[in-house]
Length: 237
Image (cartoon, rainbow, N blue to C red; front, side, top):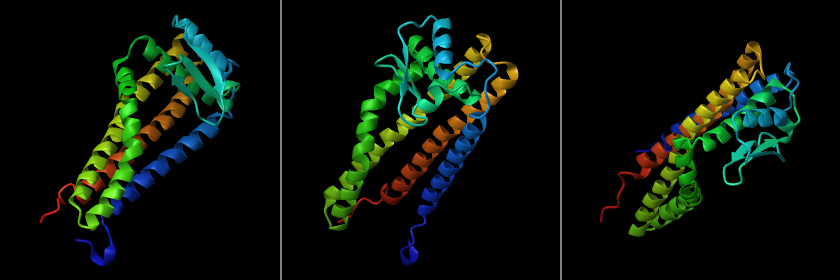
């Protein structure tokens, strides 16, 4: 029961926001710090990526620049490691770490890493669920409040769609953690970074991983709120 219009489940939303803001702030601070530290190897992000790919016998993946800041990603469909402008030509420890991380995804793809395959497989349904979830929930709430039973059904379908998006974020976690693990190993075995710089790169990659954890946690809290609000509120005639 909500008193004076206060919805106590908003606490879950607030917690999610705080976690997300903290993780993003941690990532920004750490990346800014180590983006000012030049790697002793003097290699740019693109050079690091090409070195790692070559060292692993991956010759069908290209390295290309992409517009934006921290828009780095690996595209398994076109076999391209895309590095943002602040990574592609930078020689910083942060840039080296990010470039190696994206190559970690390329290595996963080359070795048919199962969680990556699973994530790629659910991308279409996760995108569809993310797009449809809130419109269906909002329309359902409107119809439900107007006394239409179909409103409850729409809300339930919307929650299910949102669950698919949450599932994608959960599957993403082991993929990202493994890519960072592979990145650190490659930077070590290829001799690109000495031990002290590997620790700095680890800090960058750990901060980046926190943003994925925070996003997943925030989405799970939002899903929990939806279930609390609507999961047991089937309309009774």
